[in-house]
Length: 102
Image (cartoon, rainbow, N blue to C red; front, top):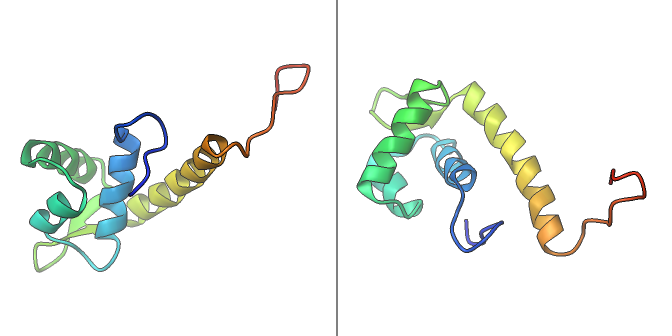
């Protein structure tokens, strides 16, 4: 992901989105995930462990990580939230109305 949504550092959600999107394209190896997601080895191990344990990633017969159905659903949900946040960052969000709701 080229643009961070909030602040100058990527959030955990943005990193999870990067990993899930990379693995959703037919499977990806550990080293490719690390370099394409711009993570250190320790960060990579932590995120892969979490995503694998929670059922967002699986390993195919060649040992590559692939996004599961649960991971794909999560990826789609994150994409919706990221689109909203990007819209807010670019000034596309409206001002809240009088009762505090947007």
